[in-house]
Image (cartoon, rainbow, N blue to C red):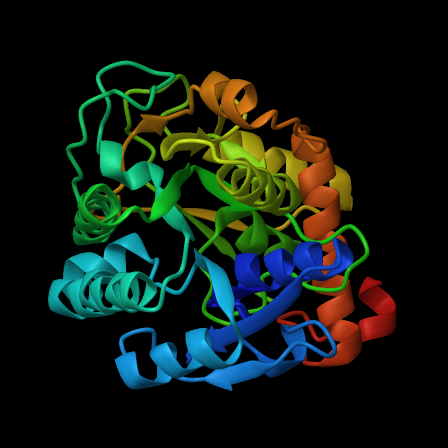
Length: 341
């Protein structure tokens, strides 16, 4: 039996594929390569270029590869972009997911692990936020994911598709072996952007909003290492395979860091003082969101291994240096690769 990983050439998906391959699983990847990369997919794993909304293609993959579980990462994920292009986000994240779920039901797939988001909570009244908190997204991105959650629950109730919905908080870091990591040139993840600034790949780092109701005026987020997040997916897959019930769980560490905290950590770990400028708030950004993650630990036996901001940052920096080694490019300060590694 095979696990189908959608978006498996992207940041989190490629790490998931490595985890599955390391565990001896059979894997097939579906990715449209809009933000993913062929080289990021583990050697020997079939990569099919296409859309999750292409039902004839998905149905054929399920049939030909005997797919028994789907781990669904493929999505558009930039909150401000969703505000500018809501219909594009509803098409890619919601409509395509509906098509994928239908293929899973018709193809006899037993298990579905869904990559959701803390954005479904909007601006939570209580922090840390638990899974039973009101879901009131403040961006089309959050709504697009919440709609998919609802469809998945309803389809599961009607057709017996056992699922686990994992609501991510802020994913960061990279594979400790530097095999894969965030590689999109237009990435907006704070730790990646800060690491690029430290290595001279960006002239500066913009802080979007310094007037939030937080101790230092910048947004507070719960940063989770990508490897711990991927481990939660493996634990979720093991849970449903063992006959466990469908679940909705947060994936975070239960404590947050402000934007300025992260910048200071990147400067300290890298030993480089890079330029930081203040900019206006971005639409759709909540002030503070931190996970209550005790349910994931209890239900899945999930045990994080990299719950340390400096470790997350060090892995992100190592990955940026590895990317420069593989794909040399000029820095904003005119350094060459040898000078910054």
